[in-house]
Image 1 (cartoon, one colour):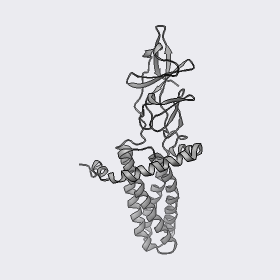
Image 2: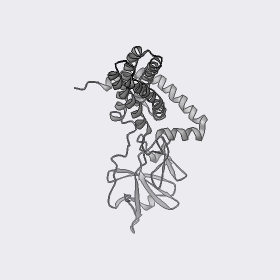
Image 3: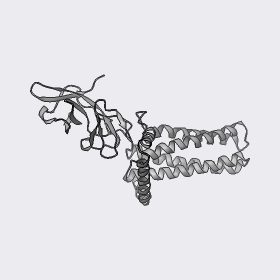
Image 4: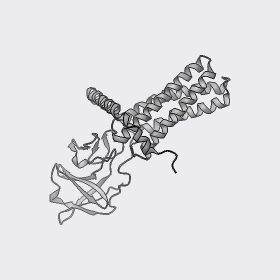
Length: 292
């Protein structure tokens, strides 16, 4: 039997839906006001440049620092010698790196909804409270009150651990930021997709080929084929807009290059599969997984 019932926990967090909605709308207005510069910052925090969500990588820094500081504190026993000073440094390093983790987490959270959104807000609140405890502990330590600081640091670590649990729940149970094309392979060999006459200039056609959901469209006479599923949250790309050689997801605005499948705008950080195309003498469009 599981130690924690995540479904029951999510049901108890429904009271967070209203403040989460207000906060998301506030962030959305900020993005609109900031324009292209704000979007560039968000893309940076989403990890578009990395090809992978940035937030998980950054969260390892404060958690690792605080885990080591807690261990050093246990060995130091409040004496404030070399291990104690190292623990001071690690608490500070965890607080500084935690700011980056928080910023990237907010960027990712802005594009969530439902159980993901409320769990994400609870995750953020726990981590914020943990950072507050560690901040208070660091002040006490630097002013010579180490015995009073240790309980705060322990409480901060427990809160951060609880926040990490909810973060893991978002990814591994709710599937937040999981690549929706992770199991999309498509045909290794040429496979029939559609009649050539059905793929018209500027129009988008969705079809199923060898278990893959594929988007077919013709751009300047050339037929492009790529996954019809947004890697970020599974949005239907055939319902999106084709803009300047990209297709825009209708759900959160992620844009993917029609030729390479690479991300041109977040929140998606992972590209989508593309397929090679050819037209047979019989007038059929065939595709296969891109090679090389």
